[in-house]
Image 1: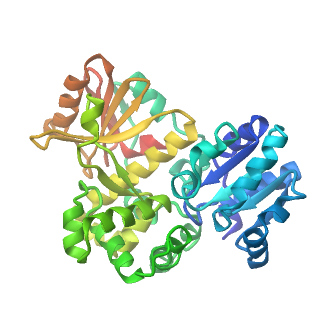
Image 2: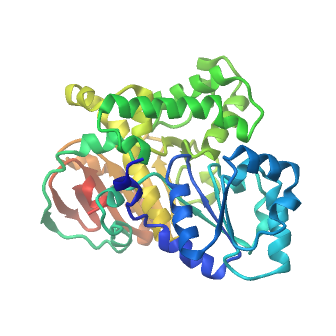
Length: 413
């Protein structure tokens, strides 16, 4: 990885430092190659913490064969890739129960530790989990985190503001945010790395959380997920395509969620109970990874603009997820679709307030582009904060009360 990339400031750094000041164990979790180790090493050096990585075979063997001995003399340490020795959690729990001093351990994991490996109750009150995704566009641009979320929940945008076109939007979407991919200037080399990353996920990384040997079908599942990205999840269609049962598909998709490859986004409904019976939509965590699996490059989109929509939607999902994670706020993200198939791509909900976001891969907007947002506004009533159409245009426009159109670049500018 280039020095220029490793030195980019991560917006989660201050969150980690704050958590270490008042919490006994802090866990940084996120996809492999998202920058967790770089951040953990930086903080370890600042705080004089011992650094141990379980990617090292000797450390890993010691931790798995004798977890008690492994942690015996650790008092202020970073344990990288802790999912490789899950029994360590019980020993860390024992240590921090004997000593309540904050900032004793900083651990990292390339799986969602509290979905895949550890019961949340076992470390309740002792650990704070912070997600670190691949670089956001603001981090790449070396900018402060955008105020987009807070402005959206306030409905606080200009009635008319000229911003200018994002001439490199397609390139941003196809590149994604993985540090190792971004340092490769050649688009083919970059996609080759991302394709190898996806292949490794299916063939090797799944085995860290499940004893599965069916790597061929796992790879096919990931390919099918890429083809149907942005659509509602139909387990029966997945099962028919792959020749396996729906329960197995559901379990395998869960494994890819635990590895931070995909995420199923639940449906929004004003009635909480009805949300549970509506179909989720699926997105990839990184748009560059999605483009690589689909074998779509920038020049392909230039020739056929119809291929841009699903990629742009996943790109927006990824940026929103990073904004939510970096903000430290409790914001839920879902999608909206009624019986007449009127949709809103993303619904953000915080403290009862609702923001709707529609994504359009066009340079302008039409009245019909607000159809779903107007319906969401009616359904939400007084809880509706704003509705936004993000597009590939150049200006912010207030369309009507609480409804706006604006360039996608507002997510990082």
